Length: 342
Image (cartoon, rainbow, N blue to C red; front, side):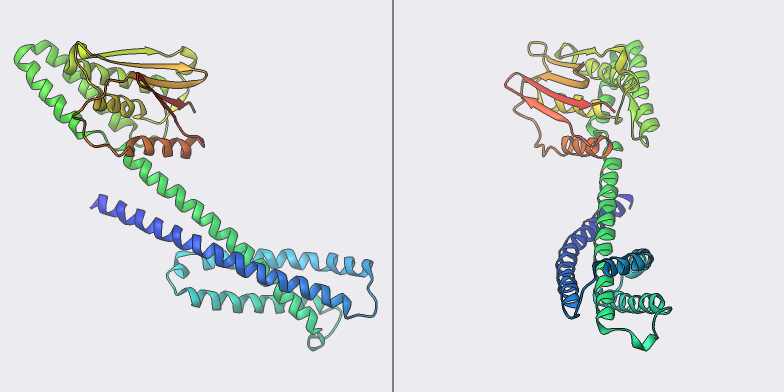
């Protein structure tokens, strides 16, 4: 049930993002049309008079400026309201008509209030009414574009958060299955080692449960976890797996997302041969301010199909948390993943 709910949230986020993307193009086009009409009206208005006074023109702008600021603020408030879930569920045409009527009404109200000290209500120039309405339409379109862009950005962030939570809550079920098989084997052969193995396994899952809801952990915490994880793998693969850590103390308080090293180690184990004659060497070290995880390349022929979702999600996770992605370099002999520290 929880999984289906997540899928519905993701689908809803994708639909709303697609809707906002198409709507942005409509808003840009309509905004350009209204802006062009406003410019033409502003050009024709001075030309229709016998004389044009620049000081008088600038004075009029200064006089209108407070009303413009008030109008834009009110526009923003009602546009923000029209983008709430209450109105998002309504027909697009109903929203367009409602916003259009309110925009025109607000333009007339502000125009009347601004001219009350100078002339009667029914003596307003037609040009002033047209320019006021066109200006407010253009302002509303720009604000609509801004609000939709903001909402779209928030949807994308929420979508990444959902993916991030899903990734954090996952640990390969094959790991638990294989770990239990190793435990059964150790119980029959060496009860003392089996007891130590259970302790390591409990530490691994305690870490998963404890840090699952955190966005970041210190490198020290992640290394303590990965050591327990690697010891479990070494008990399983024996001399087919070698493990080395060379991280300076100055980096231990820096942070990375939890379970990052486990994903990379698991990825290396999944895709490479692990035998005493052809061991897998995994190294975790720092280089030029980044945390590196490298392994020698001995590809397996029987590896399961992989679509790279784990690494892609890890990259998106870093872009969300640190505004920069991971760096992967690979050649015939070495595979290296460089992780920015946060």
